[in-house]
Image (cartoon, rainbow, N blue to C red; front, side, top):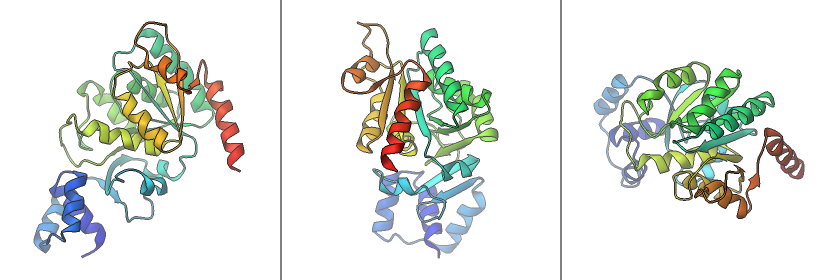
Length: 263
């Protein structure tokens, strides 16, 4: 039995739960051949494992690297993530936030940046939509099963990304989302990217989970400022050292300096 088959089987059995999969491997939990074959027959979709050649190299050094990644769409987008940037923010986006997202993402796509987000409503969805409308590349990471678009209002967007971009999840099939899955999703969003752009965020929000994962990897944080006295997570991050962003040029200029230093 191949090691890839073992990972696939336990991922299916334990519905992508990292801890349970890891424990099953550690305990050398037995697998019956007929159970594995049944699991394969019932599976529809595509996946890669941590043992595969096309598994993103950077994932291997992240916190709790996904043992199995399910995907729909263009998996080759994982081949070059040098200019991948996460664009995240409030689900309750304002007109200002949506406008700034559209302007910045449009110009980032012109410079061949890959737009990564979590397909949540608000800023996430807007970032994906603008990337697609601009004929750019975008990757969505789900906090639900790979075949379960969430939120349901973003189902048309989900299928557009499947057709023209890439959808990823460490959860199989039609597994419904859970509040525990979203922090896990956020670590993948951070691991795919070399920088994070935040557009509108409260000080206490899930956005900061992604930020913390990104900072642990040494990624740069970019923030669009908002008005004072609005519980602005962006303004707080800028005070703490994040780059203030008014246009895509602010990001591109920093990115070039960082790339230059690394050469």
